[in-house]
Image (tube, rainbow, N blue to C red; front, side):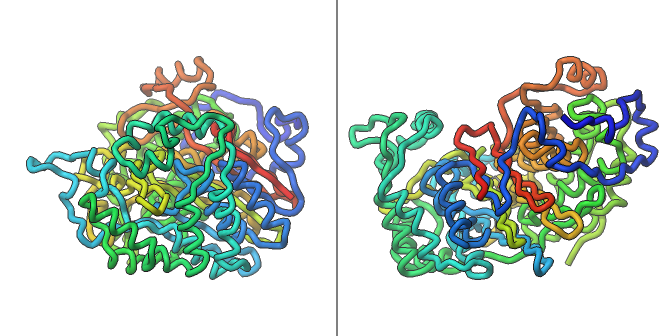
Length: 579
Ligand code: GLY
């Protein structure tokens, strides 16, 4: 075990008043190699690249691609399609997401935005009743809930720009897994049991996820998906536009017409992924790149890190009341701003430069005292500078300087629960991520404002935060997570656990998590924090709510030519594999 006292002075009594007097800690200089020995949680280690996904079958096929000489983007696209088969609760071709790609050789970090869009016939009050009240059932479990899917176009764009495989080659493993089937693990069986009620409304959903007599798949059964295999084969043969203009598009539109959905042939034909510049910030000498709007993730992770950077978080220690108090205070201020300012920058101005500036962070920091500020006393701030519950994340790196951080989703576990008849895939219910009505929370309790109202062609605000941290110009930490509103804070904590607390990547991913999202005014915790610490937080005025596990941050850390994979133990199928 490393003698931590070499890096961290012994804990001492620090008052918040003292802390706020700019104690900018120097960049931590932990070596993964040095801190591995004797650790309770051990990462996967490799010298030639690493894959971390939430399903072992997807990790295996992606690792095979790297082993055969493919690059990280090839492997990521293969993993993305494989997850659509092996993990239908969140892996998808009927949803959307974001992919960050960092190419060390060109020193370029880009973001591919393949978020769903609102159909052309969508309108601001479509999820309100005649009295102007939000109707959540409509935005979650009907055909109106679906945005125009972006995954197929997004993965194809990544492959075309950075990959070496053809789309047909990248689809091969997914087609094989769908056609030949795979043996279902316990998590798969439990997921379908829990969601059965949602599927029962739709014949095609029952036919896909349950046996012919309506009985459930059991652990060890073979699960085959012939309709999905046929859809993937059509895409392999005809290209990505098949999904948007071919037989698959026809099946989606027919599904919409049968059930009063809005997505038309024109919506599908008009869908395009967009290359965007990621949000960028610095934290203790590291460069942080994370997803820019239409995700709120990048702006707010940078904002929170800017607030926290001036405190000696490492000295306070992981899980200390001091550090948790400061994190909660930073989180609630960021989420208050999210509720007001964030939306699709193609439609609304978002004060990104202000939100991510060190100056604005200093203003917010000045509001933080020793006691909790009640959320009722926090309103969205004035960042000024305007510039012209299931998701899945995977991280992949090759040994040629290419790193991929990808988060994609159909929103809820199994999305809307609606399978496109004849096409074998689930439709997302991402329209619920718009503000049904300004001020009314979505499924994750997130409040949205005018900036995130429904508009035709607009992308709904997301929290997905695929993140790449660079150190000295090199890819260093690749992470991200599912978890709805908790995505941003989960990702924040993986970063802080490595940079502030010197954890190895497996420990950073496994450590207990906390979360505050302004409203409700409570710190949500996982099990595992000391009751004494929680009591100290209560004494400072925080409300604590211990709930279920948060996130699944499949992560990779690169140091001294070694690749370390941290698979999140919160998912029984998580898997990191090196080569
Ligand atoms: N659907 C969850 C998110 O995009 O944040």
